[in-house]
Image (cartoon, rainbow, N blue to C red; front, side):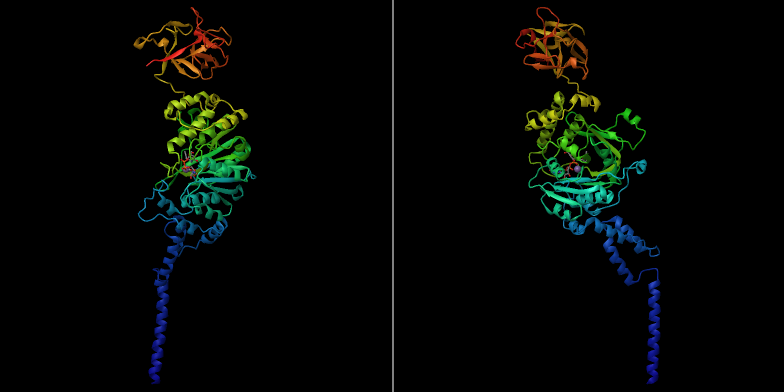
Length: 570
Ligand code: LR7
Ligand code: MN
């Protein structure tokens, strides 16, 4: 009996020892044991999936246990906690996810699924010229208030905009981030974000549009410098310092970054060309265009600013007092569009300048359509806003805007008295000055097929040669000579590239034809009743009957010799 018990104990002991050896051997095998495999799944479940940057680091630790453990997570978590305070980003993003089977483009006109998959932050390529990395900035740059207005922005893009600012800006330069929620359907989109330190949320009680929303945001700003951003951006390395530096050096500068492209399909971050500036055509349609070749040749330093006739409008830095001094924005503009022209003309014409800083880069999701509604309709709103810009700032050149956008004529645009007052008060330059000094590349369109006869009874104004004009019997139809056809493009009276020009500034001076030049004040005319008045002298074109060559003389528009009836040549 005792023997049997001793044997049993011996067998159990051997079994225990063998079991222990087997266990230890299993645990040392390169392939994971069942227990460590389940452990790995648990780590993977937290880190794999939608966040490639974070999972990359954790995966290395899990799959190759021979690598030293690079502990990147704890400090990051700490930093995150500091950055986000009590804000729960996972809950914020998770509560608004694309439903199965839903069109990912429907709500935002970009691929929401891809945006959500990226989560709240990601690494992006530093797209600057390498020389930008060694540009130095003042150590005591002033701080800025970031203003982001939005209407029904996707949570993931909005949060990424904010986090990219917090992560990629020196924190002492960020005074605050002011979100202006332009009456989005869900007030929590904005409210929850105000749990993030430095983030404030203002909500409009009705839809105002981005222009009035920005004015509201600027009014609430406590820093001396304003930075405007769209709600679907990602700022890049050291984006802020170059802009604040330029504005600190001269408060009348209004500066923009190069705007990189975030693909609306796969959210890839793509570098934009560094040779572009903002331009437009006469219909007030914004476009990116090549820097003029002479300027390009003169650019020896790729870190230098690029002068731009207009800015795209969404992403710029401006001194707050200068913003207020210049009249903020035209708050009678609605929803979207046109405000970038109005601001750009105003800045240039009233003593400031606009530039793009190549060492500052910000990504933006460019879309093909507006994902939100326009209460007055998209086209009417754009016309109203651009008409206001044209009527206030473009002087006689607004005729080219109307020629390019005939549907704008007769559409309501409200009163512009306040803005005209502002322009007078600020003592701004003319649009002609702007064209000559800022945007000489914008060509005045040739207006074809709008020739007129200038009739006085049965006689017509005719040019015999450049120096001699007179009145001759009006011809009609196909027998009208080119010398009787006049093109009336205020302020000029043209025959091809020649213009009706006074020879001196006194009464009795003859008129003749000279090559047209927008700078030439002797070629500037305006209809006054049936008469044609020279703008500078105030004298009127007079045929001096019975035979005299046309001159300018004191205006008496009721006199037959000063009456010029335009008759369209078809
Ligand atoms: O009713 C609205 N209320 C808003 O707050 C409509 C829009 N918005 C917000 C919107 O959420 C977004 O943050 O205003 C911002 C601009 O609207 P987007 O992104 O729908 O338009 P966009 O990117 O085409 O806008 C460009 O042109 C606009 C003209 O009014 C503004 O100037 C935008 O700021 C401008 N965006 C940029 O300049 C980024 C670069 C794009 C280009 C070119
Ligand atoms: Mn945008």
